[in-house]
Image 1 (cartoon, rainbow, N blue to C red):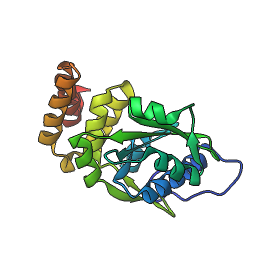
Image 2: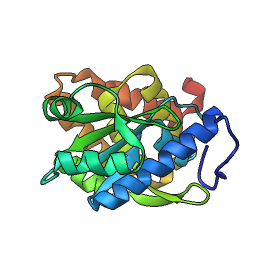
Image 3: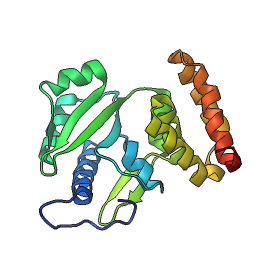
Length: 208
């Protein structure tokens, strides 16, 4: 599913209609919360033009001053419930709300954002038309930073494809500076060189 995709109303739900239904509910709940928020993860990568599949939906919300009890009540009003016992306590400890859209059974992870980079990324996010509703989505440049932190095989593939699609609109100096900070914090200095390998592969396809 990508920007402009239509919302199917056929039952039972297919994978695509499940994602659409869950994303619509999540977007409405985040809007009602009235706080900076955005979609990240696989759905955001798809929205930024990379064809791929995803089995869940990731989002993030600015956490400073967030009332978790109210947030859970707002999610519940949109058919979104915790998928673990004591999701509130887990969120306080791990900084992520583990939820599920009840109608579609789609897992939803809503990360609590505190970092200056996250605040900046939330301010830079833009609305994307998913056909019948809009959701606020992280920019490609900020997705690359998020995925440079996670650094799983899927993340590296997403980075490479996002770079290939959006290279002219990405401030690589900013990405490199942020990556260097996170690499130092994670005690993973090798990640800087590994990221440059991906950049080189996009810039010089013959190196693949």
